[in-house]
Length: 283
Image 1 (tube, rainbow, N blue to C red):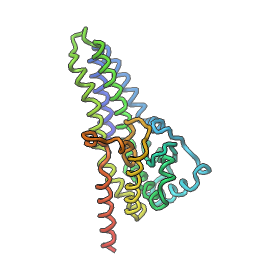
Image 2: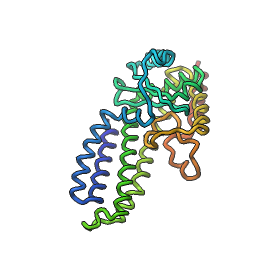
Image 3: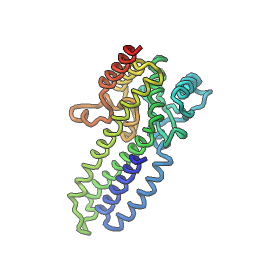
Image 4: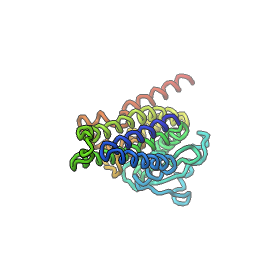
């Protein structure tokens, strides 16, 4: 909860600063009220926001019986309550978990991943997403994703405010607005990088423990990375950090690759291979 509180506090301060820069004291008060409403909404409804980003819909057992059976079997191994299952129509193979706690969790899979992965590797992905739920990564990651979207909106407001002279009549610094318009989105990506990279390694390890087959997940990661490079994903970039592999892997070029929210797949596969080797030696 400390991480969530910190993210929400950061968003509030940023929005108040944006209001002050753009519209003076009244703008600061207005954005403070808006940030309070946004923080409330992020906690209670952020999972719905993320599902909309991926155009996902909740499905029942009759619509996806095999997927439900796999989730049910693995969530029992993980000692978790049954999550809601959702499917996104995206053709790119990918998956994510969201929700504010294990009792209100959602695991979502794209149509692409359901078609692309063999059973062993699909189990590895399901276990990875259940690991996120087990470690309560979802709320922090979902809030970070929603916050990144809000920061992008604030940066856009700042850019237009700079262009049309917002706040200049009150003596505010237009250079400050321009800096915020450039720096704020970068800060959002750095926050997501710090959260997502550590969480992905932890979820990989725990996912391998849930299935007892780390190499199944390793195989899935390699296949998913290849799919992400070939098949584009239509999703708000703010929600990209929640996916098991970077949905925009095919778009990375030059310096932009330095700011990906996901650790390199080869490093994740190497870590899973080391876990599998250690388990073999200990038998």
